[in-house]
Length: 269
Image 1 (cartoon, one colour):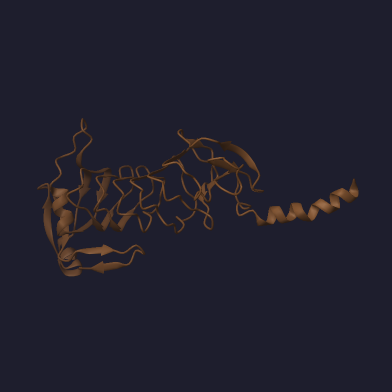
Image 2 (cartoon, helix red, strand yellow):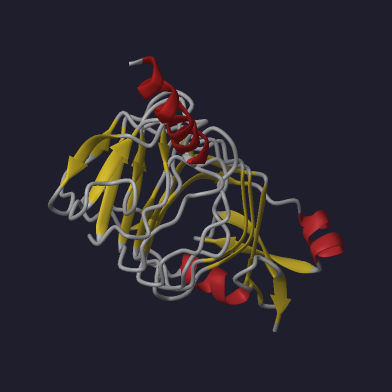
């Protein structure tokens, strides 16, 4: 018996040290090599041992995760995760999403650490998340962005020109700068947001100004708590012009159209 144990011990150690989720404080959601063959998605522990599996594509929300790892083999179009464990994170070295994903949601999953760099699926149309910053490189296919009730303080350099519905309510937002919208926009909801700096280009201003006042029945329109832009700062520093959004919110409108490339670098046109 002792001899058998000594033979298997190095193998066990090798498995443990090669598990990419060894630092996870709980279960990690993943797909592919660490799951039973034929399984759509599974949960593994810090030793990469499978502790839960789903044979069919996930149609309900997955709960109590400590982290999300490599999901590049996940074949369903939707993934909704909620009520995560304390210390939840997207694994900084392994996190990956499949190209087929259209809806990705994190509900009541306060994230520890920054959002890792990720290649967002070009088919993604909805992103709902517990975020402290807006991820870079969001695909232009994104039709709905919901990041309500997070800790966002600044919205900056985000291209939402294809976005139809944007939910930012419940964040301590005070700054919106160079976030780009188009006439596709149907909803800008930022209830409770008190902006002290609000800078957009002309096309984005026109898209926001074209929205009606928020209608609770249709859940469409423009809703903010307040916008107070400093005219001197706008003119002298931004080189912009104060224009009144909905005839009551002073917004700094910049002359140039500024967007960001997929790496997040500003580009002017």
